[in-house]
Image 1 (tube, one colour):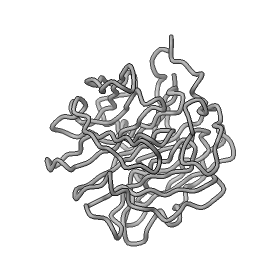
Image 2 (cartoon, one colour):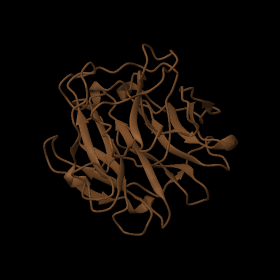
Image 3 (cartoon, helix red, strand yellow):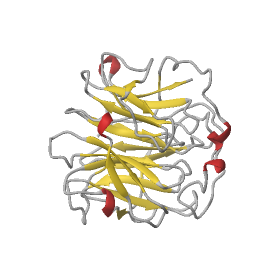
Image 4 (spheres, one colour):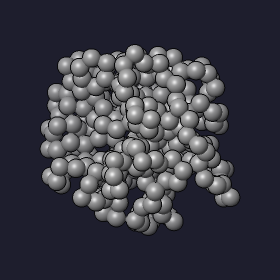
Length: 296
């Protein structure tokens, strides 16, 4: 488990497609007209204020594209569970998170919740009944944001007899990145999977150029599928790295550090906004773990 959290600025609202798992095409997504040309580095990170009574209890954040729903992994007593904080507007304060019904199973652990930008799909890692490894990836869906989440179903194509985590879905629902211990080396590596249709099987490949003998985890795929953000301990306690490719036909090249956000302390669990102008993550800078965000 790693951590990251939410943003407090305004972002263009999505055009949601009730009944779908994601945007039907990139043209439906609000980032389509956005450009990072001429955009410089990230701002100085600021603390994300999420009410909690337990220090260091929140991590693994993800958000809907309108910044109204924030999902985190929270440990209050015993097993980690999926919590959500919902606010009325993108500039409002975050209320105290509450457990997500059905998604959080009593007596089991749920981690790395990754909500889709449209808020209609949620992938979690869980050791609930039916799991074949330590943690498998499970999918919960809903037809509209007003509905409750469905009982999660295990994603067999993405799961193994080892631990999987952090299944981050693309807006069209045809690509996903995740971490897995399936190589049996005791540390997680990054994987990419594609499918031809939302009902089709997943084809999984290892992101060899991004992996080391150490920890690579919490991947977040940009909406255009060209950039992956992730955390790694390859240079110490934990930093945020990224890899950018020129087209979806290319392989991801060797990664570089995300500028401006890393410190000598640990940074983990990056989440990137739909337009790639906001990053949310966890850091223990200052001696205690909290959620932070930066913009560009």
